Length: 301
Image 1 (cartoon, rainbow, N blue to C red):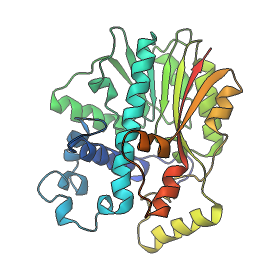
Image 2 (cartoon, rainbow, N blue to C red; image 1 turned 135 degrees about the vertical axis):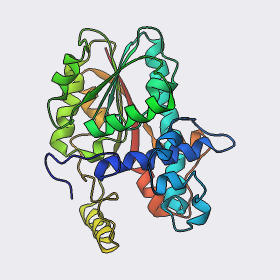
Image 3 (cartoon, rainbow, N blue to C red; image 1 turned 30 degrees about the vertical axis):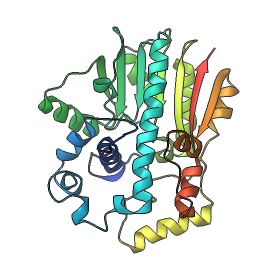
Image 4 (cartoon, rainbow, N blue to C red; image 1 turned 180 degrees about the vertical axis):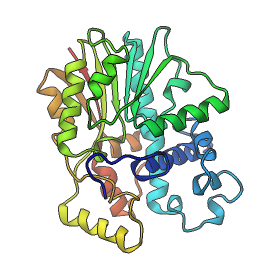
């Protein structure tokens, strides 16, 4: 169970979800017509001894028919990761084209955008996350021999602490436009921390700044608790429902709009249909989870 001041590395608690995301991005990249290609996702999985490395090193999904990525949820999760990656890649391309040169990845995890996107000269990418997660990422990419395509500054900080001070201490200038990303993050923060995160973004954002957020509508409490009980009964503590908070401080579109940002929401279900990966009608549970997710882009006037 989550608790105040808990921490993790790349294979435990919240950190392990980054490997699930990386594996999904890697599998998406192997499709004949991928929505997005992250060449580093498989590199991260191979660097970890265990099931995620096995996906690409001989054992593979075919030898594990009960693997979660074989389920209806897993298939849609891979589609979701491809679509989500495509959406936020396009968001950063638009922000860069608008002249933004400060990029902030909140809970960066195994995000490789500093290495794979064509950033304009002078761009600085700030990556905030737990120290052990950032250390794993640094070691793997250094061993792989790659250099970032922008100036990258890794900031080891818990987003429940004073991340704003850590960011500005690392050279971030609140007087210049910036582009922020909270991807796959809000569900791992209690509502009070979500509020502090939004407030911090707003306080540090100069005019012409951008913000992108992925959010989901909380499940009915009884449904969420039933799902959590299922995980425990199956001996799956620490897989998903035991790691997330079924809370939302406020809808991102509403929160940012009330503070002078122009916010544009996109339903994940609609976006999947737009990119040719519609939800399967035969699985209402998966459909309900996807329908609860929205991707929001906001710009500050």
